Amino acid sequence: MIPLASPTDTGLPADARIIPLRGFSGCHVLLVSSNQSTYVRKLSRDADYNKRLLQQAEKQKNFTGNDFFHPVKVRASGQLPSGIAYIDMDYVPGVTAAEILTTLPLADIQRWSGMLLRFASAPEQGTIDSTIFKNKIVELQTILQERNLTTPAVAETLARLRSRPWTGVPHSPCHGDLTLENILAHDGQLYLIDFLDSFADSWYMDMAKLMQDLIGGWSFRYLEADRNLVLRLASLRHSIESALEEKRSGCVATIHDLYALSLLRILPYSSAQEEQRYIEGRLSAALNDFL
Image (cartoon, rainbow, N blue to C red; front, side, top):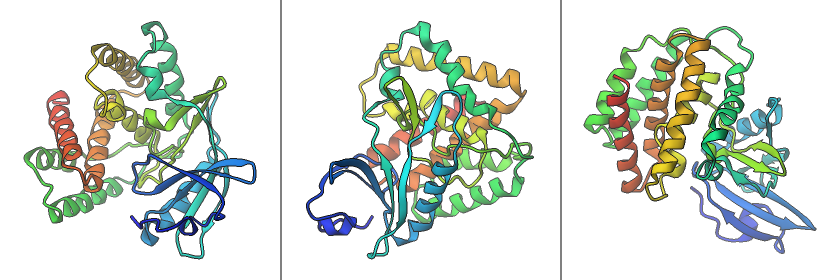
């Protein structure tokens, strides 16, 4: 990530008030107050990431949403004189769906299940070429080997993913990083943030990202263990998976493997050993859970 040496590195006025926000992609995320306007600016982590960030901006602009969820408005995007890309978005001072789930009454689980399943109703346009998944797995295996991250759990997960034929995955619009941290509630509305340019656009990918939370507890990894939260997540997972399997027999097994693939894709960007151990632990659990 390129460090911000001064306010001018952000492309913002010198008198702008800037508060850094937490981000997980390596990008700088800033809350900006300037000229009586408050918004969020996301800066590419480096020049190599520029294209991806601008693709994410286009995805967010063009996402039509559904009955319940709406993308946060993109105000502007482009490239700064420094050569770094940026996205400016409306600021939504809401709470995340992850925060809501920590206290959600069990009676409301079914309602949330129904809302989240709307992403599985995205219009489909054929299926994705299986070689796209196979090539991604080979690419990821090379990266993990180069960075000495191929632990037994990683190697076993890669072997499992290589054995899957990867046929029948529908091509459709998707968010790309649909974790509960990327859903905000504000004034009775639900908003989507941090769209991701997925290597394969499919509602299967969105469901896999949800499983990253419902199975792996990703959005809750910094919280102390909470039996009630575990019960809520398990109940929501069961409701969603039952509906998905009824919608398309066999799809949940593919979604589970996409969840494992998602964990592997995070691993090279996790610099902290504690986070790496967390991911490896979730991979081991997934291997046992999905047998």
